[in-house]
Length: 253
Image (cartoon, rainbow, N blue to C red; front, side):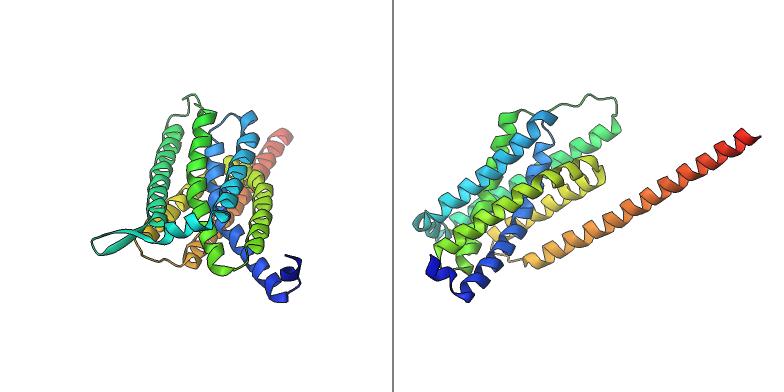
């Protein structure tokens, strides 16, 4: 392993793979953040850590089960002239799950907004962890197969995935809290999950959609929402100043 890391090309491959794994892990973080928000506040941090821990364990198990993983890429059957492998079926099932879950969450969010007096109902801890585990499997298969396509050395894959998981663990908390505090960002995150779900289904059906387009759309949308947030904050500040000025004027009179 040390001989590999002494090679400059290995370092380039390692850094490239870490960056790619972090980007692919954003999908995982968004989903975990949305689900964890359904739990009571005192359970969220533990569920978040457990969710990312499950993602790490699944990625490691897949890496050390390369023979089984290669079998997932081989075609299992053909339907309407389209070949389906185990990976395709996992991506399609995971994509449909994301579409259904995101649509359900958007519906629930709108229902809560329309009925402000409705009591907040928290989901069960075991049910949330189960859902996180299901989607962790989908993202892990996609992540590990991508890593195998980029790098030949198992040790580099392991290091890259470990580093990316640590960074995900550090980012998951702040991202989750930010999404929970800003309802418009939560709705945007759910829209991202619908986009990601549709992409997974398309990839499972052999329609390749470059991830760069997806991440550009997400980045652009986040930038627009940040501008909207700054504009709303500016308007609130102006309103407060105006109210103070009116109040001061009334006191002088």
